[in-house]
Image (cartoon, rainbow, N blue to C red; front, side):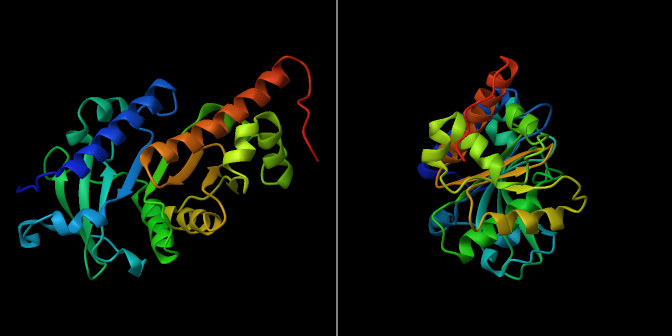
Length: 254
């Protein structure tokens, strides 16, 4: 299969994705093949010279009209973050969404014609569609499984305003960098389309959304920014749990 050549800007984004993927693995937030990243790279599309007829269209219904003709870096399904850090060209794809919104084409990356985007591709595209509709500067969607944040979603306060006060009250950076708090999705969504819709709605007011007993979604203008938000939130959760395990209650503002 023919592939495009990566310009310097795209090579830099690949390096950034590989770096963050390695962080996710080292932190224990990406067990097995957990963790996925998408980056909207459409701004570099004028410099991507390719005959789309060379690439097979893979059928998929895409409901966000804002995504027509857009280009994305996306992690491949079944790949591990530790592999992405070592061999990004085998664990990443560049896909172009069809103008007709009836599928996408893989222009670069992966390991052969059977390579496909992450199983979380639908939620990612829903979020990217929302970001483009609102002309948001964020181009990155990151998902992983931060251990302390997942533990905290088991609290009775999860889903309530008090949950954000716990995060803000235990680590000042959480309040400073995420004054809007986190959005919270309850456990039990079996359909990815439904999960995507709920997450996308929450991201209208938030840059981070938690999936109960599952993980966290963050958005950013860069891969590093999306990672930093997740890192700050997990630190807040970790500090809260350290306080609890030490036998005293953290001082939470009302």
